[in-house]
Image (cartoon, rainbow, N blue to C red):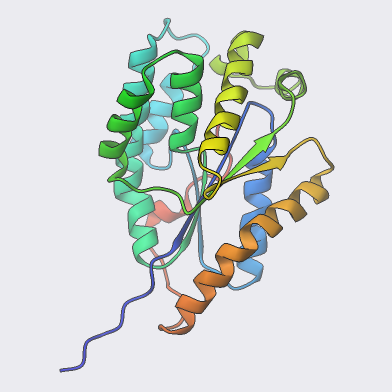
Length: 241
């Protein structure tokens, strides 16, 4: 009996950084580049990515909402992430797609851990439950001075609850991302985000290239590119900055 070969597992690439770092723009450019090269991509975001998770996102970012306890904020994020992984990320990876996610687990550690002061071990434990222990293959951390990022955000026509946080809070977030990148150099690559748009995009392409080579070799041994038809795979590309 001949067994049907399955697609090799896809790639999971996450994009992280402080407010106003430009990662959402770079996620869009990276997605366009990958599709032009013939890859099947799923572009999604956190908080969000499914109808239910998008509702949670609205609550988290609402400037007019009541004060949110750090623990409540974390629990809401994990609930949305569990739904997101189950409905979007894991199915796409199983089908061999490249998933680009604007924010994921490292944002929780940076914002709710390093900046809000919640216990990092507790956050990691809860995150393992929410993610089914999924870890990104590559995480791009877009770094620039906090003052630059906040200036970009506060000049935008629409702002959210996080844009109103203190300068000290955002500095802790940046320090958290950089510390995480230092601790996980094999997975996390820091990209200087203060350069011109095209230069940052080239740096992103260089960081992604080795991972694509491995993925291409695996796909060459299998069937043609996967087709993904689920409505959950057409989520919004613009996420929490």
